[in-house]
Length: 180
Image (tube, rainbow, N blue to C red; front, side, top):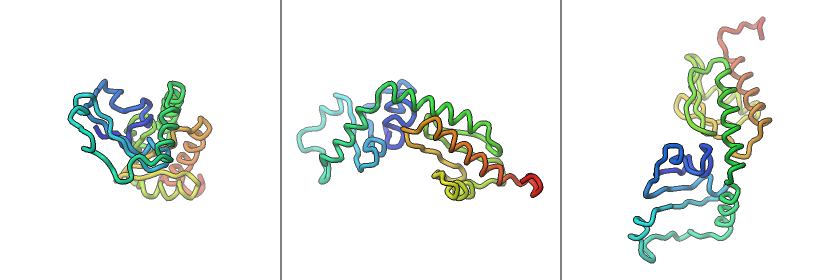
């Protein structure tokens, strides 16, 4: 199962598949595992691991001690209170996003959120306006993508919602110059 983007706490559990009570034979991890350092990992159950003999899988750059130390810190940090904060911030973010103008729908889970806007609002325009105001976001086709750091605070979420709200209000074509 590919957990490169969804794994390591992004969805509020260590692995996203935990939300669905899945126990995959193989899981791939990367991105969040290194806390910004380049690392990937393949997790496997005993049955799959039994088919992997010595030297059957390796990497020229695998096992870098600095990067592995960073990954150890990330894994050690993923305790119940850390994941509880991820879930609390995810609820806070989604609740706030649902109240914003010009939002058609939300998708995603935990701190991996997609925002679809009403007709006339382009995600690329929202991205550019957010960037000008200091909020870094991404796009995926017609959606705005929010992938905030898992360490964000309630205040960080409030600030992001304030910026997004002001950006969307400014883009509202029904708003006249006198109302601005």
